[in-house]
Length: 256
Image 1: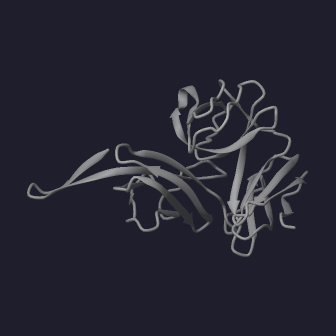
Image 2: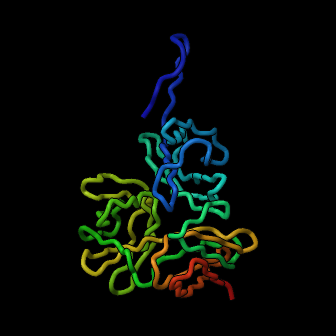
Image 3: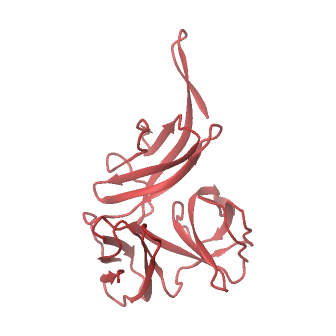
């Protein structure tokens, strides 16, 4: 996508590289106005439209990291691959920070992990797991997912797990065809996954700070949670099962 700007004597061709929509991870609603900002280090600021979409122009082809944060939202970093031919649509889910107003339907998870570690949390009993609409093939960047509701999963991190315990993490970047429930992934699948026996689990993810402290707010659902932290230094992985019951506050220590 390209647009011409300027007078007749001087025309400047600007190429639109990415259109980024920020949404609240808990509500699934767009984050508009000055509640959050989005940027790429070393690149000019995006053009922010009235509908909350941020437009990045003239990105060099290759890998970039799009960063977003706001007053009541934690910093989020999402990889993005730009090319010089197409405009990429990207949904980024913003996670609440400690300033976010806590409702009765949420659970607050705090704890300690490796400094700057990726922390992931998901339902241990696979409650709310989604299903594949058809077999997913290795190398595919688009899959069909049945949600069973109007829930918005764009921008969501997913754990795809087959019955033989093989699995991987993928992120939904945007809906390709909402009527057919087809979604584009941030990366291609590394294995085949059959429609029967594969669970698609929604994952909440945050990053611990430089001291290893982390905080997540998730929708209350009862049962058990799997809490996982992975060290960015050596890839070491720690996983713990937490029973939340009727609790609204959970402490999860993910260090040894």
